[in-house]
Image (cartoon, rainbow, N blue to C red; front, side, top):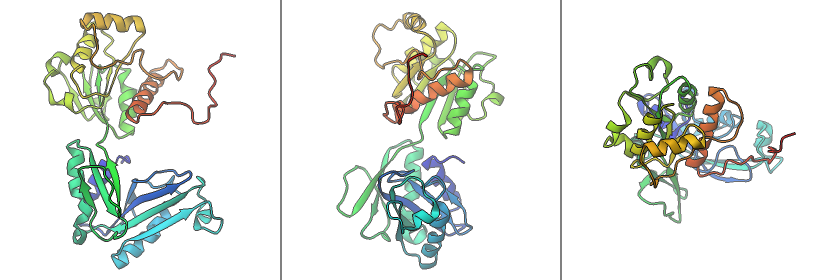
Length: 324
């Protein structure tokens, strides 16, 4: 199972009454940390945990602390601080060098499961929501909010649905792209009406496969529920129709496979003089490599950066563009 929050909550929900559960939430970080404020972890009395609050170095001790919460049915706050040499973090070998504070809360019918069934319902309906934890009274039920306004005693966390990518074109080079998006836990819709493409056995990670032309999808509810779209049909007419259809979609990213001169041919075929939504083409980041797997990595990296509103630069600045 991947670490997308919707999937973690759904896994917990299916077993919510089968075991004792503790919800772990990062409520504060300072300096470097593997995960940031709002990250969640689900722990049960079988010694299982779902999700990550660190790179794996904290979880064993968090589970030990979670047992105290199960025994007392009371919330606690724990802290790991690599800035202090006498902190337990040194013994655990945490390598990030920062401070992490974690709220551990019992998760049961008595506290209305901290409203997580409602959160799951909203996320599965692809609605952004806000989750409030009262840090002054952590045994009170967490709340689902409509806005991001923080209360004096509350921590408000923004929760987003799983990213949904639509891929138009299901040839052999779409296979690694679908597989990588599946590893990320994304929702994947694959669209191709051509006879030899979109064979289900080659795309096990696809959430759904639609064997319809892009033109027939103009009024499909799918278009209002996608975050990104990649067009890779290797056919000017196919790609043009997909591009035209996507102009009225909810996609925050649209990418077109192929060089600049081909992009212009696709635009001309689609009779689009002015784009209502910008199109990335040539698609992807300049990572090098010409294999389908490398191209898929390049594409997905660019999509990820756009959805996360990042500039895709190297953290260290070590990458040099000069040829030697």
